[in-house]
Image 1 (cartoon, rainbow, N blue to C red):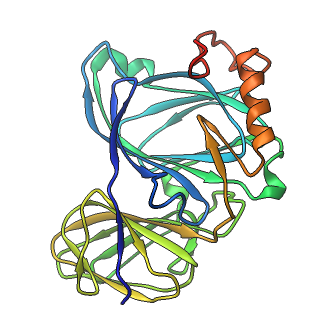
Image 2 (image 1 turned 120 degrees about the vertical axis):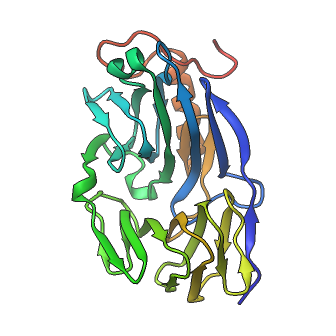
Length: 288
């Protein structure tokens, strides 16, 4: 087996929510279509507080939010207003432009709540970068699952392990949540060109190498590998077909730097669709 590349995440904070962010990094800009990976760490919000990300813009990407614990309210400039619960997929495709809000639902502000989950960004193929924006919500029970020999797999988005998610991805994608009991093993085929594992918790080996917990391990291309659980494990596997170089500036992703510059100017000038009922917004860095 080729040597594994391990990407240690940066510890950051967004509006009081601690996160680990392995993508993008200097060592790895993307894995398949995935250009951004945030692990929203387990965090307790006491009564009267919660996550509150005011309206902000995106272009050229799809965002996917997947929670293990807690709830979020998604609102966007299309008029979507959706409660996202554990195991659901919140899928927003920005295309040419969109704005959205993510916050703790009002009901949980009264009681306090815990939050734990993942948010990823997937770059759009060049042909789809100027598509009309869209939003879809996929309840946990609609996602395909398999369970065999101590291994549970939920296909969050894309396809793999003989499962295919209903989430409308725009390119070849693999995004699976995997749980293994101690001693269980999982064969990871070379079905997708690029793949990586993020071990949320537990002890596992890939070949003869120990996986690093809460780090992104890049798998060698074109190699079928076997994952062995040395304890109860919880992880996600991401991957797919690479889309080519992408520029990322703040919340904007594109293969065309002119599209990013135009988006920056439009947001700064408030020439952007707004989220219904929302006035607060996150200003362009250096502008507000």
